[in-house]
Length: 555
Ligand SMILES: Nc1ncnc2c1ncn2[C@@H]1O[C@H](COP(=O)(O)OP(=O)(O)OP(=O)(O)O)[C@@H](O)[C@H]1O
Ligand SMILES: CCCCCCCCCCCCC/C=C/[C@@H](O)[C@H](CO)NC(=O)CCCCC
Ligand SMILES: [Ca+2]
Image (tube, rainbow, N blue to C red):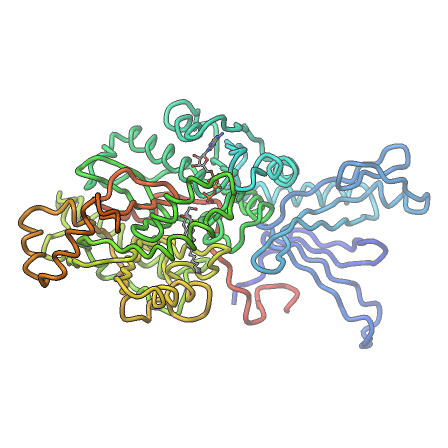
């Protein structure tokens, strides 16, 4: 059990018209209703509230002017003469309150003091404790996509987020983007990053993708790392990234916070949370294509994205329509997947345990990864993944998905790979082989129920560090020769028919969906970079099961 930390202040203060014993320690602010008689009173149970200092947003002195008191929204409330004396010596503490489904709210409590100096002492003591928290951002660079999702980004930021930042004393430099890739290019070349403690994007997964592309690229150039070389160890980004969700899927926000709620995200930024995250680099023939943090999907998810881009005007509903269309179309694609299994790690894609706040799997595997990286550096053999470990699968696939995190989102609250980890240095490679429409529907529907979407004969999943894909039409002559030998004559003719563009019966290749962007190449080389970036988040919190004995109210 953690010891209660040393008391900083203890006073008798009032909340509304009730007297409380209020105490401040280095870690907690607690207010406990005074019980006048020790006799048990069934209708008046003792009330105790406790807030962790790390979750106090700010403290403000209640101002009074011409017999009026300032309200939370800045308006003024006339106060009764009887109250006047008290109101002059009041202070309000704003703090994080947990609501349903991982949502956070900014709650407040006003304490009135018996005298002015005591009130000032409380305000300065709380501020002193807050000042010791060094992880909180003071200056943020904010990019708003006014066209993401339902085109509400600007309104969401101005009405829900900016007032909270102001209350918490966080200063911002806000840029409303004027065109696609505005934020990425600004970060790559222009932004004076040394002036900020973090970057915030207001938008969806596409906007987040712009931010990481700008930041990761800039970090590599500043550190002399060649982003085009797939074997280079990338330099980690020092600036944390905050996501204010205002997009169509908001998968990255949902999978790192547990909800896509702008106020919750703003509060995670203010309290200075930190969540490391894996990033995949995607290359084609030693040329950098893109980074990915959530889904790399060929076949079904690539086709859904390609089709949905033509329906952008529909907003988030475009994915449902394109999803249905591509399900009915039922295209499959041939190709070769090779992968490097993740060795020595703990956790598998079929685990019942989930990646949650303070995840031990991420901590263990992250540690393992950095120890290995150090020993490779000492041996001067950074590209030591021996070819012997690679495994190869050739086949016909409805979908090839790599999920570097669960990809949980409102459409699928458990996600594409429910047991994937945010920061374990691996991605879950999911291969859905050619099957009937009915079976594919069973697989898809299991993303929305408790049933295991991998427990099907035509689905396999591997936890990997690196993988490559080569569509059949790109394979070398010798590889195709091998394929021909493996197939019956009938299959060969049907394949030739399918590959022939004039037939129009089925396409030979799909596209890669890379975090919601279409890749320009189909043959790709993907490598996971463990914990390359950090978010203003803490992972999804587990609801408390047992009474928390470190909570002063429980003692
Ligand atoms: N000012 C702008 N005008 C046009 N496009 C923009 C602008 N700013 C950003 N974009 C682009 O808009 C695209 C979509 O943005 P965003 O991710 O915010 O919303 P979304 O696609 O609706 O959501 P999601 O990615 O969650 O599905 C991004 O790829 C981004 O590059
Ligand atoms: C017939 C009933 C079927 C029901 C099946 C539901 C399955 C839903 C799984 C959802 C997986 C989302 C993965 C996230 C991908 C994001 O990086 C990307 C960018 O925002 N979104 C899409 O590509 C948008 C992709 C949207 C796909 C529907
Ligand atoms: Ca991962």
